[in-house]
Length: 193
Image (cartoon, rainbow, N blue to C red; front, side, top):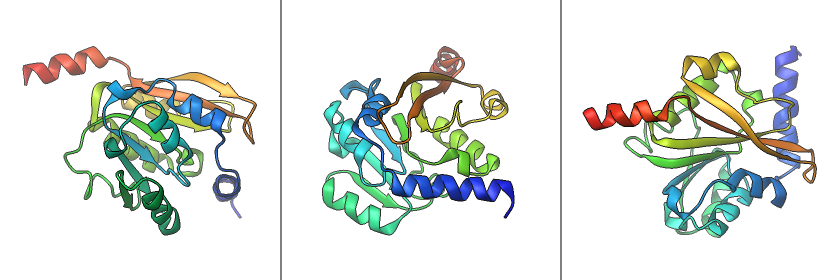
């Protein structure tokens, strides 16, 4: 098995057997408030981050949850009946269900390290095309650095900053905020249009 495939398999397996804990959920959502507006959650799994978003004041009706696994999507719909739960592949979400949607933030439980770099770049490009100027993409990782390669961040005009880490999660995890390098320029361009 090639090294990249082994890493993808291991990360997917790890995500499946170790749901995120409350400390990680708190870190993932600490910069989000009721003022953030609609939030897009990618790979919500059992809804640990979703529940934390509700605690931060996001209205359930302002949550859009994208979950690939059918069983998790059904579970989420039962737990969060007022949220918009879509069972689909994140690579397809901007082509169909979310076309024309805008969000105040993205919370991602996706295993970016297990994804192909082309897919990570397309995912971020799609998300930032549908985010408000000062909105951010929040991602956790079990790795030692941001899971998005610097080359991808640079090519999209993005920056990452670690906003926290917790040893009280198994395994320990760090959370990164990914945002536009120059959000003010985007706001000026939108006002000119």
